[in-house]
Image 1 (spheres, rainbow over the protein chains, first blue to last red):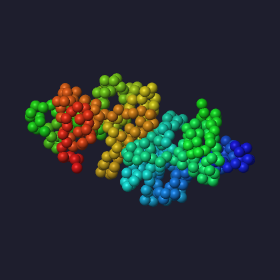
Image 2: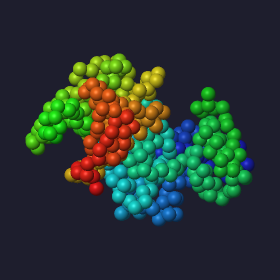
Image 3: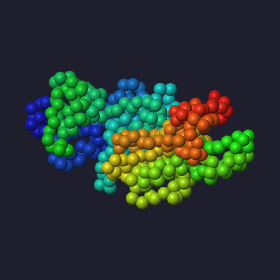
Length: 200
Length: 200
């Protein structure tokens, strides 16, 4: 990482983290000794904000409390789309029905999902991830969600746009063959799989 | 209804109701003046119980509190399947994760769903129906639910078995072209659509 930075190459960190703001995520990595700043992180929430602004979408948010600050600058009055993330404890019966009602009430429902994970593991056991709740809303409203985050093409394009670099001049380095390598390749980037992290 | 009964023809009432026991459902209809008894009602829960017994399945229940008595005689210890109904307020984050964990922990997950409705209307607004939560669990566990209730073939077969009547000697009468008429026809029965009830 230090050698990449010293060489003058442009750099972005691409994560699917949606349970916390970039600030929190960066602090964690800084604590581990990494030279990283918030401005260098591409995460689903800011990528979604870019889409919301571009298309004049005003979201109804069904996300984790800790992620809400990422949407601070977004107009949320009179919503014309639903943004769903891994809301964890916020996935209540009432909140799911509310998001559903907002969505089904639209002439053409727009559902943006911060990832499509099926489940993940926490210290107290497995938990349903955002993808499961996304499927519930998709089925109920007969819509297809737009997924933001790896391996979605738009997510990598967002990172490239932030750097001002065309895909053919960029390389993605990651430990996940589908989310990191596959996603980057499908958007015209080269990609390198490292055998660290969750690689088995 | 009285003429059918007077003629000596065998009769079953087929409902997709899963928010209450048959007892409650029958009382409501009796209050409206209908000559109907619990033994004449085919509903998803008892149909599911038949399947559970036949295949020695011990369910983990994610259903409405008022439906639980229908499963009184079913062994629920050490579950080897999940039965999901319209659990309403019981669709909590904790309960969904628990049902998911039971399901994903099985070598070959078995998910039985009491219907596949997308949503329904209550006095306080639209609510997600069991089908949405079924889809969430299907996606998370990469399984296909077995749906009990109209228009599933097995549901009509269950009603026929209870009467001891072959499909070609039975006729289904209902107001729903898909759930009532279509479902019955696909299992070899004749069917008649009435232009009452929810028919428009």
